[in-house]
Figure 1 (cartoon, rainbow, N blue to C red):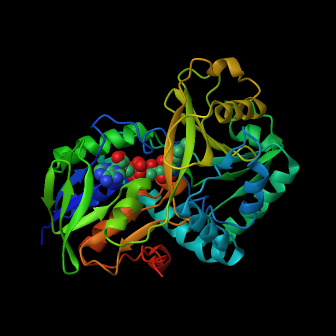
Figure 2: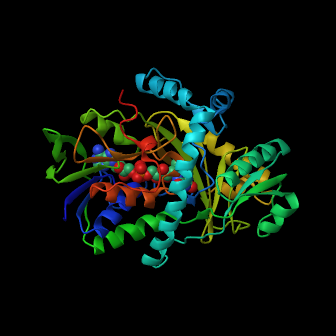
Figure 3: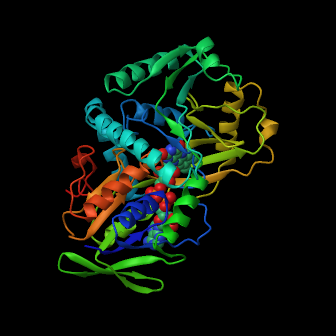
Length: 419
Ligand SMILES: Cc1cc2nc3c(=O)[nH]c(=O)nc-3n(C[C@H](O)[C@H](O)[C@H](O)COP(=O)(O)OP(=O)(O)OC[C@H]3O[C@@H](n4cnc5c(N)ncnc54)[C@H](O)[C@@H]3O)c2cc1C
């Protein structure tokens, strides 16, 4: 039966949810407070599809690393100390999740989702007539030091045990893998199933094809609260007036927890600010995307341009750009890729985006037990592009009363922090 579905949020998670709901014959309206031409987190990111990222952000060693990096203004990870109850409780939950058993439970779930999403991207790529430069060339985790390479080799071993193919390469084999760029590294781990794409193209291709298929978009429209009746939401109040629907899907990125509060849902979330810089005419263009492991910088060729993305700054909803952290990204690039010089970046305009980060590093996907017709789909942190199509597909299944069979969804429940 065709339903009226309202999706709050026109980022990548909102658009892929709209895609699969529309495909199932539902009447979908996507509402976003931003204009049609916008520049949020789903646009300026590094565009990687990463089965290699099966370890959640909340993992052993992260607290120690965070404390070490806190004092360096150019470091890739920073928590701005501030008197905020939300931040304190988030940090407490993050600390509790940074353990080996959480990683052991979460890794197969993230692996299943990434691999299923990769398959969805291949389908989407043919449906959208390759409108987003999907490139299945794999990913290199580049390591400058032997110590980092040893640590990455351990993760590679774990990856192989989870059937995510990974191989450890020395400096010579790394250079042979991608001869188009000179690298100053001790070695790398190569993940052949990772891919990359152009997020701007993906967003634009999805948005225009969704319009063709009858999806409605309400731009510059702010959703403020819900009208409730018993265990159902009957309408969402917006800056343009109330909008009724049979089903409401919350895909509001880092702002989702504010919307959740209206429904007494506890969706702890912090914004993980990240920056990207894009060179239109790089002096060398790799054919494989990579991560500069020690610097935590992602490097993605996007057609003829080259994007570098990095930093995880937990500093509230502020989107201002810290020039010292951008400098940190640039200086790490020149360490790994000796042909690049700081002067290459002088004319680049840095971009900032807010990743929606849950404290346990897992997204919130599913129906809340409290409301019969509200689905939550957010909290994808550094994996929102990678997990977007499978998230959208599962959301559409849930909207139709089906149980997605991709993986164990219990760990992703939007009610998991409600007690
Ligand atoms: C530097 C950087 C690099 C990254 N690289 C990668 C990568 O390589 N691979 C990967 O998988 N991920 C990557 N990410 C993460 C990815 O970009 C995010 O996970 C993803 O974009 C989140 O999408 P979203 O739809 O949940 O949120 P958003 O894109 O933030 O969209 C949410 C939308 O909801 C709207 N909204 C919210 N509340 C309301 C309301 N009340 N009323 C109306 N509208 C509302 C907002 O206006 C917004 O447009 C990166 C992120 C950064 C910052």
